[in-house]
Image (cartoon, rainbow, N blue to C red; front, side, top):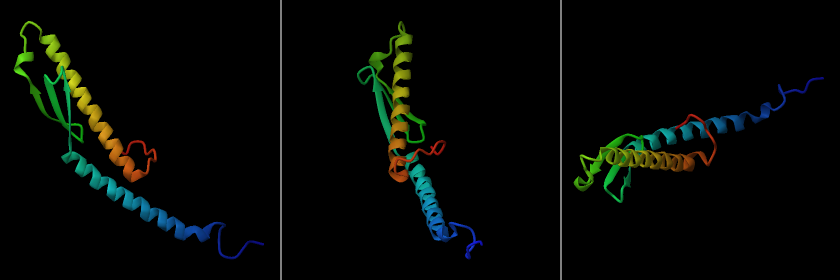
Length: 115
């Protein structure tokens, strides 16, 4: 005979609702955090500060500062390399900041594609 009360485990509907509410709150918290991260910036430099790059938490370059002393018309490649190194470091720092902040919300859960 089948047990009364429906399918096995149906008594856990309260737990399911609780989990759904927690997931909705996490989603709201993550959306708010993403907005906040768009406002936050990271700074990276290369060449001993000759090139400085500021990026947002959204990984958009906001500003690039170049020390005029590093501008050598005979060595444009070095300038390009310094700019590229500073930009890559700024993007890495922005990703690190985003992962760190998201980890606070998700409790370290691996949620691929969330950010």
